[in-house]
Image (tube, rainbow, N blue to C red):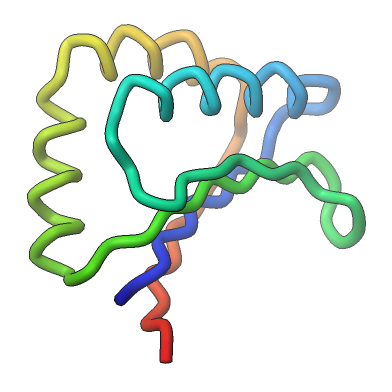
Length: 94
């Protein structure tokens, strides 16, 4: 099993709005263990969205499904102005 963690660095004052929009977009897709978090310590303005997948094949299939969805594109278009950078970690759960 794998944990997929997407970390966004929001523009100052935008982390709460970005977190709310990401949470709403997660509700549109069946993603196991999905959650959105904001920083309490560490770097400022971080918003983390994570979910689990059974395999890397499942991750790739789900990614393609979501990226080709008009719903996703519409939802994410509203978030692009809220963040300045981001990264993705895929961690194997042992």
